[in-house]
Amino acid sequence: MSLMLALDQGTTSSRAILFDRAGSIRAVAQREFAQLFPQPGWVEHDPMEIWASQSGVMAEVLAKAAIAPADVAAIGITNQRETTVLWERATGRPVANAIVWQDRRTAPLCDALRASGQEPTFVRKTGLVLDAYFSGTKLKWLLDNVPHARARAERGELAFGTVDSWLIWNLSGGAHVTDPSNASRTLLFDIHRGEWDDELLGLLDVPRAVLPEVVASSGVCAHAALAGGTVPIAGIAGDQQAALFGQACLEPGLAKNTYGTGCFLLLNTGRSAVWSQNHLLATVAWKRGNTTEYALEGSVFIAGAVVQWLRDGLKIIRSAPEVEALAASVPDNGGVYLVPAFAGLGAPHWDGYARGAIFGLTRGATAGHLARAALEAIAFQSAEVLRAMESDAGLKLSELRVDGGATMNNLLMQFQADLLGVPVVRPKVAETTALGAAYLAGLAVGYWRDDGDVTTNWQVGQRFEPAMSRDRAASLMAGWSKAVERAKRWA
Ligand code: ADP
Image (cartoon, rainbow, N blue to C red; front, side, top):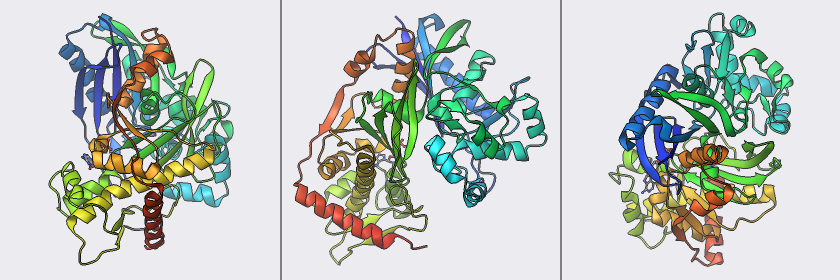
């Protein structure tokens, strides 16, 4: 019996999952690790703890499934994106904590680059916007602030990597690689040419000597030493791109939405990067052989987090799943709209000064209406991003594949289908991120033959068909738009 091992290194925990040929889960191990907040707006991880937790769950999952390293066909890696690690090549020791994607310390640096007119160059080459979210300015910060780091980097003594590179370095004993789905999140990588870019390196003051080699997302790039054996590392992708693959969105026009704390929507746009008119990101989906495929990406900052707010802020529910029954206690939103712009609004509005607001309250409004309005807000925001994507890509979505914690909410899924007017489909295997990494690796070593296997394995768990009239959906959407306009430019 041979299995595929996926390592899913997330923001709050490291997981290892064994999959079989049917794409079913055989064993899972998971370990949380510390989130470090040294100053307001700063978020760090200890890279050694990332590695310890990841190698720990890897050993644990093999023990759980009672299999030897020889029974692992290959390893696929997927990771929290953009988080930045800098380490010594000679010792493998990090020179500082990892700067996590959520960290805002380089916002002033981004402002300065914008003020000096550099944003269009970054947008054109990388498909991103100039934001502290991405790795490039984080790396510059480390080179500027860790004692001697820049001189050492220039002498070739230091290695930079996103978390995929950091794990592979440790797994393999010194291979220094990344894949284009991760490289495309650094602000240093030209997504059209598929190479690190000297002009961008110059703008961010990053010496080429720190960079990993960019290898394909699917292909053997190194070997991992594992409990006395070695196993090929054959797949790498950032978490959202891996989920797109795991959802079998392998053709242009297929899209997935992950409903977690926020929402991440990715639409496969095929072999060309689509230029967004609506401030969405163009990003590499994956590279296989010599072919790079791209995606449009849009995110909603507050999605499942609005349910956490009902629980922890308003205390009208005790657990997230309770929101569904509370929302179902009323037949509709009763005219109540909740705009969860707690952290401003992302695509397609991009208003950092918008703030949360509730509209349409009357004496008849109940906690049920609030719960419903909160769930509907998740769907309204996702619908807006999807419409923006369709307009950018010039195509019409035929269904939306979904995953993430909040997709367990059937009322939310049904409302999403109603609003979009297309089916919303939840797959049987909800671990799409890890599965995508397993597929990328398994296809490279012949564990799966071709994309047909991936498509066949992808099975519908539940399908939500739109049932609402298009008039009703349009009128709800109009109500939402009116509410959003009034929440903008508040702070
Ligand atoms: P993340 O990976 O961002 O931590 P998860 O995919 O684990 O997110 O999903 C957790 C989020 O989903 C939380 O914000 C939680 O409030 C929300 N959530 C969990 N269950 C439900 C539910 N039944 N209905 C609505 N939201 C839910």
